Length: 138
Image (tube, rainbow, N blue to C red; front, side):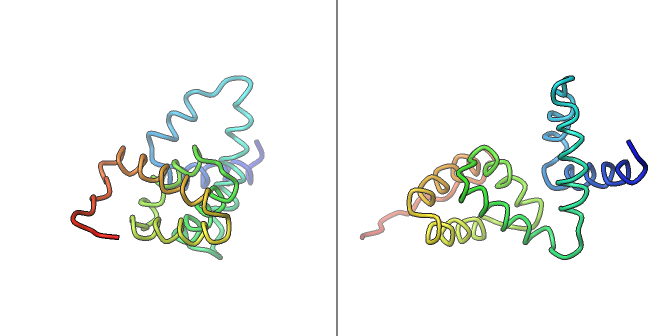
């Protein structure tokens, strides 16, 4: 690995850990195989070390964008990963709700329905279960 790529990899690894959490990154990097090692190096160097480290957009906005894109593409596993990561970047449940509603307008109601279902499962796993409404009439 060249010096510049090594620097980008190290910077990317630091951002990846900060955004996704140490446990997730450790799981991803410790399960590398001969087949996946170059992929892990690639995404750490370029996605995290070149894109997420750019100064033009703060991480909070990057989280908004990433969640929106995952909804639009229907990439639910990655969406749920970034719901967790969003909290590390300063978002809260209200932000996530607004992102889903906004995306549903442009990506379609089925995408919104699925995003709410997926986000609810992830919030429950995080111990942040949405509170049920009581005595509410339509």
